[in-house]
Image (cartoon, rainbow, N blue to C red; front, side):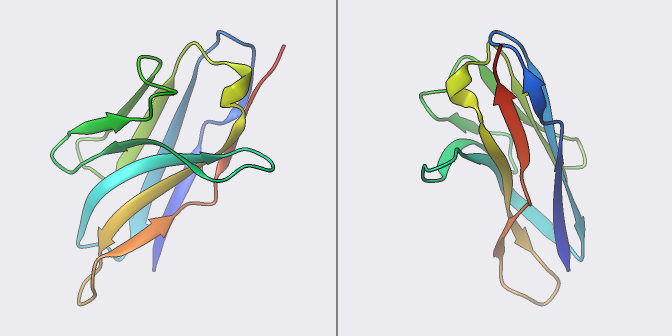
Length: 120
């Protein structure tokens, strides 16, 4: 089994900051890319940012310059530092990872999500 557990969401005022974390655990041989997506009520899931196992990063235009994605040295935890938050950043933020499990093909795994609300 593999688990991705997010934390760090909450309520913040516009212009504020939050730091999300997502830890992968379980029967894991190797983790490739890890990333964050978000889904607001009534909207489609939207890609936010990705970091590869080598540390290369990519961001959606809507968050570029405000959000920073990073990984732990053990490579099993991904972080999303969110600065200058706007009301339109309000969404459920979900962690995603490409994971090799022993004896199995690489799979795509999702966390349960953590809610971020930006409001005054």
